[in-house]
Image (cartoon, rainbow, N blue to C red; front, side, top):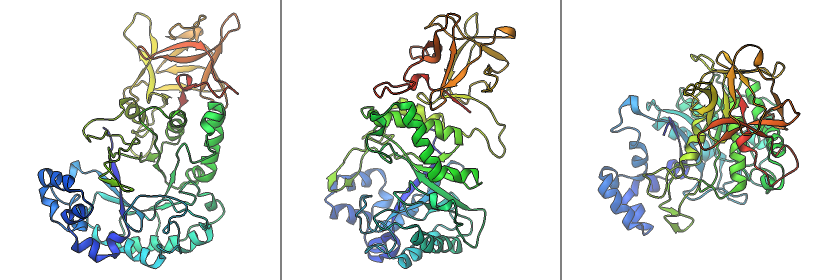
Length: 451
């Protein structure tokens, strides 16, 4: 499916409670929770781990039977203190100093985990704590204790990346704008940020026009963490996602906005989640994870269009060792605009971004070039957009708050925008829609992100 890394969650108890980690086997753990059928499934498919202590089963997954060149990269993510589901404001382990979050024990646990995976080369990063939160998630406490966890990991494993979450469920790193994070090491510090449709104003994506709310929330996301990229710090969008059944209007609109932003910033990221279902979650056996890329069988992709959308940001657009390729991304599909060579007259269509021809758009000039040919816009709505050369190049403008509508005026003054004909993924010209105010309108088919 094109993924190269897994963000693997673990509870602090796995390192600080020897009875749990070293004396209880996988079989005993499952049977104590009345998960007998699941234990039988492990007996059939993965018998080698059934009678291992819990930690050894966790560890052996990345040490046995996988050739080095096929290994996934792993980020070990300390998700919570005790095994269970996460996360709420009133959790007892929500933040430093809460009843179940002792900073000293936490730092020791991080150090132990870093030591145990020190020579496992595909473990490339450790996230110190997932989604710090609560009524007392003060930046002063964050600055007091986060460096201690970072130093514990670095002392135990000098090679591994150290990844830091912000506050407010890891949506807010704004306190780093005017205060420096002091540690003894350099060149391996990474920050992470989470963004869901519910991370901001409740119901925002259905209460407001999509263009307006997308632009507004991207501004907030940049203010709260995206600014770190402009200062030269690595930033991972380490959690995002939505209900893949397609029934959540807010989630669908937010995802189109997020993909555009992630592509523009060329972010590394992790989607929540791969999971098809859970053995046990909050007392319910085999609860389906509707945010999961896999369905409940763990064999099939839940929503192929969602996976295609993610493909648009799976490959880096720039960076060390890469030849920068400028593209025009359609966030809704995860595809890029390219030349359709199949007809007598070249037109535009969508294609996988890795296969698309480079495009160039200078907002001041207004000419969209696909390789060495320019866009010629039609005078009639619904017609396919052609490519040509010479003096027939059309001038396009970026309109709406997101600047993702590429518009032009016909000879009779009609305002049209580039759009996608979903029947064959060809690019057509249609009346511009959802430019402002109307909250019921979805502009996704007309959003194009210049990269």
